[in-house]
Image (cartoon, rainbow, N blue to C red; front, side, top):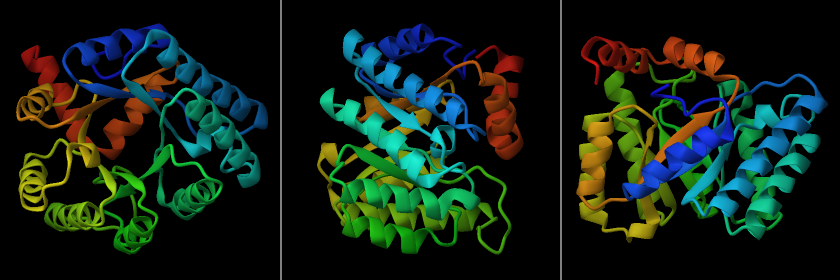
Length: 276
């Protein structure tokens, strides 16, 4: 329960309030992905809209994250576009923002195309995610810079073949740092999403060198992971956003993260053994 708010939206509200009281913002994620029917996608769309309504009603400092396979990407891309458009229209009326999460490589191209289509349709209140371990990411970032996109930069957690993804820790770190520099120099809004001390130091260096305004970047961490690092970044004067997942599909989410990112499983094991 340290890593997931709970099953209900009220659980997420409680955690977000706590983050807000500590001068941190949040992004709320309704757990679930890879739906197989349109009815499931419509229900996921309804749940996403409920989160936006609750954020507005409770006056939380938070936005929404969604996965496209949760709202129909692998069923029908036009159907998915309509669902996301519906979510973004509500978010825009509430003065809020929606982050489109990145999933595995089978959906990368479709996700970026749908994001570009949304921007062309006039939606400025949305952003996307780039995974530094993907070999294609530098090319993708160059296109996103032209759009002045809002980008969350992550290492990447899905298990991908070496032909399309960097595998060694150092080369992933190098690419992350390179992409972060490109995005900051390109005046994109960047969410630096990592728990890696080395990358945090690199990010601090780039921020010092390039001097972006506070509104152009923020750091992001997962709920329950590296709270010490999270608190230090805030103390250092940087903006921090905490990823707060909730929902009935918490078990599948947890197992997938443990399988795809042993580092997270290590944090959990350490917490169990030390009680911290």
